[in-house]
View 1 (tube, one colour):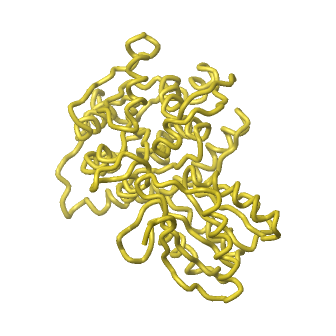
View 2 (tube, one colour):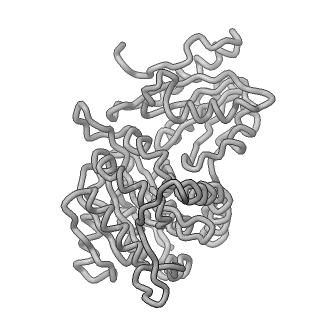
View 3 (cartoon, helix red, strand yellow):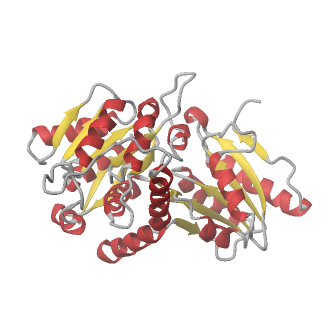
Length: 392
């Protein structure tokens, strides 16, 4: 293991280099361009054995990934924002064909208006496509998540594609101290990918992408759903194994100072780090505050999350995107639904923040904790969905 200073994009490219996939097909888009740009340089320098396919669009890139994965290859790519949106059609195909493709996704707002900065609208738009979704708080976690995602996606009880997300510019372009594994450690940890069925095995011919009408479509979807239901236990096992081998253990979520907390902020991605600083500050003033970081958004660990959060008196769910349902952001609606069956339900409030890359800072999150204190005092949620940091 060695210590390096790299940006989020650089470290995701480094993880891809260590994985050494058979095929990478990609089309560049800000702020994810560097990931595949750097990986292309690894290909040119002979540092990997990968066949690099510079596609004419993101739709074509994912289509090429599907073809390569169907042929039995270990396949990866990267994109962001409108690029991920252009892939939407074929994301469903990758999942339905049970292809363990890994995608490095750099979270960026969707147009319009045109914006190149971070929010989670692109990833959330793909939340029901059948892909596993791992969110990263920082570059270290992004690196670890990419390596684990390969292991998770290729597990025989899963065989589903996975996207590992980082927050555009906040993580993708920020330099951090990162501990990286030796190349041989990653190679040994992942092992060789040996798919059970491939298009290139002429002794066992298969059909891929056949027309599937009323007779079997439902059953095939049910099998895909069953695989997604297996993902949580595989993630836990992979995270446990990763921790034993390399010293950094991962679960479905992370609890920060939640042992004696009465109120908590729930967040995804880089904002969890900011919330931890705010939590420390308000604890110094006597508030029993905590932070609950959701690491895996798909599948959503509803039961486990509800068990943890039901102990709180009040929670604030922070969303960096809106569902346009008038019922709050995607994370909020999932959390609220998960808590529905809980015997003890905390008061729950939503804050939509940071759209288009608008900053979220420690003082704003401290204000949220202050609002939660008032909510406990009144035993009532005054406003269910709030917009933090916007000029109303």
